[in-house]
Length: 256
Image 1: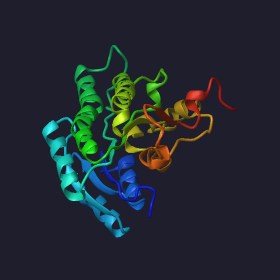
Image 2 (image 1 turned 90 degrees about the horizontal axis):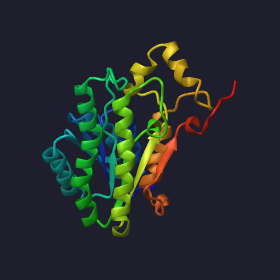
Image 3 (image 1 turned 30 degrees about the horizontal axis):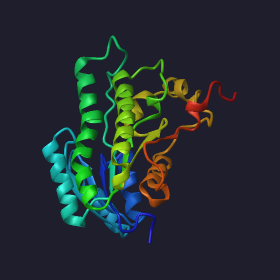
């Protein structure tokens, strides 16, 4: 019996990176998991099954409400309900820069996936969660929603600030209906999404110097926070931003 025994989780962006780590960890903790990605990812389901867990693979583009709604319906049909909605899908595009140079197309795609996509997942998922007796929504934001940077990624940063605001409002609206909503705010993590910002020593050190712990985080460390938010251990926590960032948002200066 794991910490998520008896729960059903739908995880978007679960085909790789932090999402895959979350899918495998949640299944290991007893949840039945819908592995949702823009393309069906049966290899994740196979890995979960090999470890003794239960999961299904679903292809869905979070920008398309019909696809998201169908993913939720299949999850409920397969597992009998929905108790955890883990909105992990997101993009960070290579030409996302400052207010002057960021292309309009990059801004629009980032908002479509990171903000609209998350909302559509909540739009489809919340009714299923209410019918299941409530549960936990985990929206992946970022530490950059809490502070500015001179290595800009304006569309991404703006989108994650919107995720925080959306999370708070959803949390308040549904607080007396058995649904909790919290934002997970990872610090710099060595995932494919951040690879372009960490592709050489100069880029890595430009960011590393600001982290008091002196290293980047891991996907496993971020998923530990998500697991807490998904579990009943966080039963009195809603509308919050859980920062797991090595102390970066707490620092004015860092150790030599």
